[in-house]
Image (cartoon, rainbow, N blue to C red):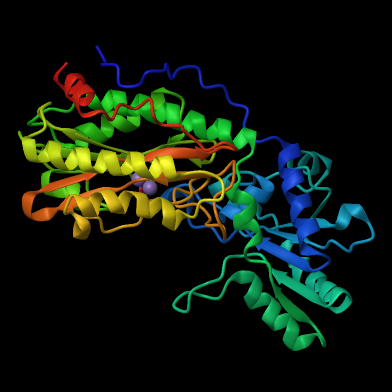
Length: 416
Ligand code: GLY
Ligand code: MN
Ligand code: MN
C-alpha cells in the first residue's frame, strides 16, 4: 500500500481553469497600461507536433488562453475609436492540406470570436498593413515582449517596430517590457487554485515515488512512479523535466538523465512538479535511499532545512528576494558550507517553472520557490529542499508543506 507522504488527500481535481472574463480583464489592464501606445504580443512559430506539444510564448498564452495557434499575434490599440478594435487577434491563414496533418482549425466567425472572447480576428496576411497604419496614426509603439540578450534574436515586437520606424516618419518606440512580468507575477485566485492543484498532484507523485525508493532501484523506476502519480492525481503532466538523481547525481543541479542505480547509502534528490491547466509546481525533496540518513547526510540535511525555514520566514510583502536569499546563506555559511550553495534562493513560479521575473519587491499574491541546497560532489552528497510559497498580506503560506521534509518523518516513511 502506498505510504502517506502528504497530510492532505489529493483526489478529485475539478477542472475550472481561467475564465474568459479573466483573460479579458488581463487584456484590459494591458490596454490601460499602454497609455495610448500600440503594443503586440506574438505566440511564436510552431514546430512539427510529432516532436512534442507546441507551447506558445507565455505572455501570449496569459493574454489569450490560446495554445494551439502557432504564428498568432495579438495587437493592442488603446486609442481605437471602435472599442471592438482595441484588441485584434491575428491568426495564420487556413491551410486545409496542413490541417490533415496537424488538426482541423475553426474558420473565423462568431463561434471562434465567442470562444476566444475577442471580437476582432483577422488573418496574419493583414498584419503589416494594419501595423503600418497604426504606426502612422498613433506614432507610439510599445514593446511588451521581454528584452532579448545580445546573443539572442531581437524580440519580435522590437524587430518589427524598428522596421516600421524606418518607414513611417516620427514614430517612437517605448519600453513596456516590465508590464507583463508585473501582471503575471501576482496570481489571481483562479491561478492560485490551479497552482494548488498542481502542488496537490505533485504531493501524490512524491507519495508514489516514495513507495518505490530502495537500494537497488533505478532512478528511472522512481521517475516513472512519480510522473504516474502526478497524472493519476489529475495533472496534465510535468511542469518541467523531473530531476531524479542518486549519489553523485544528487549534486548535479539540473540532472536530466534519470537513469542510474540507486545504491545503499545514497541520497536521492527529487526535483519535480506537476502541471495543471498550464500552471506548475516546483518541489524538491532529498531522501536517504535505504531509509536512514548517515550522520554526515543528516548534518547537511538539517543545515539546509534550517536555512530553508529561515528564508521562508523572510518571505513577506515588501521583502526583496536578495534578503530572502541572505537568510538562507547566513545559516549555510555559518555551518561552513558557503561554497557549496552555488545557486540563488529561488524564483517566481507560475505558467513557467522559472516564471516571469517582475521588478521590485515581493507583493501579496506572488508565488516563489524557496530552495537552498548544499552540494558536495567529493562526498557524492547533494541536498536541496524546495517549497512553493504564496506571499500573503500578512506574510506567507507554504503551499507545499504537506510534502514531508522532517528528517525523522522521512525515515519513517521510507522504512515503512
Ligand atoms: N526545477 C528547477 C528549479 O528548481 O529551479
Ligand atoms: Mn525545482
Ligand atoms: Mn525551482
